[in-house]
Length: 96
Image (cartoon, rainbow, N blue to C red; front, side, top):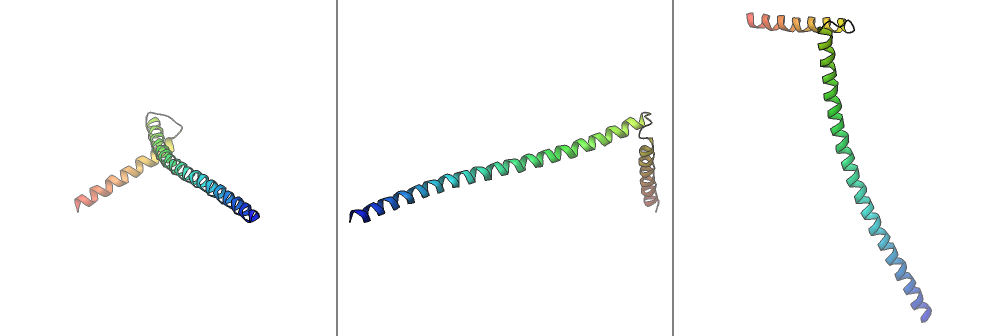
């Protein structure tokens, strides 16, 4: 009987070790999920900041070209023409 008791004790120890490892892995899994959520939030925030900075850059580029810079003169002319067309369209709509 002692060999069966030893086998049972060994089996119990192995099962307890497995449960212990499982709890550790579950905790690590939860920690990784939390880290993933934080990373996704950070990425979204940075993406919004990038878009805002791109808009600021375009605005600054337009302002610089309006102040007499030769670098973006063509883009400025196209933007002004586009704005004039929009204004003309609005005036035409109001006239009707």
